Image 1: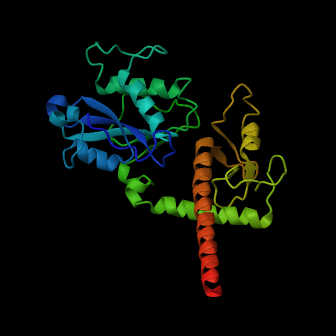
Image 2 (image 1 turned 45 degrees about the vertical axis):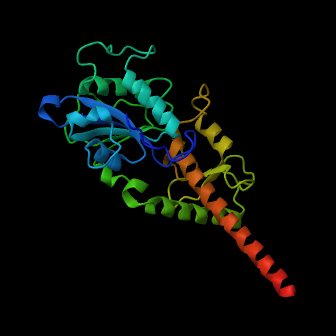
Length: 288
C-alpha cells in the first residue's frame, strides 16, 4: 500500500492529519470501505481514484471512491496512524468488535460502529478529536453520543478551513492574529487571569481565549487546574469555560492556537536578530 509522506517527524505537531473512511461507488462493491490517513484529503481521494499517482493498491479495482467521514485533530501524524491501526484491526482487546473473519466485517456499518466505540474508548476519548461527516446519506450509527468536547460537523472536504483548501491563507491569518495578541499582552503587562502573576515569562507558556474579542490570558497549568476543578481525577482537561467571556473552550483548540503563536513569535524574533546582525556587519564595514 502506498503511503504519503508525513512531511516531517512522525512525532511533530502538524496542522492537519486525519483518518478517513472511503466507500466504493462501484455497484458490485457498493458497501465496501477503506480506511487510511492523510494530511491532504482532497489530494488523497484523487490518488485513490487514479487521477494522481501513489494511490493504495487495494482500492484500485474497486474505484471510484467517495468519502464517508474524516476524523481529525490528532496531536501528531503518529497519533493518527495509531488510531488508524486500531480502526482497521477492529478487534482490540479493550472492547468487543466484529471478528476479522466474520462475514461483512469490512463493510460500512461495521466500520462505523467500531469508530463510535473508539471515539468513546477511555484512551481516545480524551484526545482533541473532531468528526467531519462528508456523505449526504444517513449513517447507520448515531454519532451524537460522543464525548462533549468532540466537535461533529457536516459538509464537503473543500469547505474545511485548512491549508489543503486555502493554500495556507487561514493558517497565516491565524499566526498574524496571534502575533497581535502577543504584542498586546507584552505592551500591557498582562497578568494571568487565574494566579494574577505576569503571563509573559515565556511567549509559549500561556493560553489565550479563542474568541477574537476576548483578551483572556492564563498560564497553561493555571488554566488546566481551573478546567479540572470539577474533575479532579483527570490529569489533562478536554474543555472548559473562559474565565472572562464565559465562552466554551476546547483544550485542543487552545493548544493549537498557542503553537501557532509560538511559531510566529519565534519567526519574528529570528527576523529581528538577522536585521540586527546585518546592521552590525554594515556598521563594521563602514568603520573600515
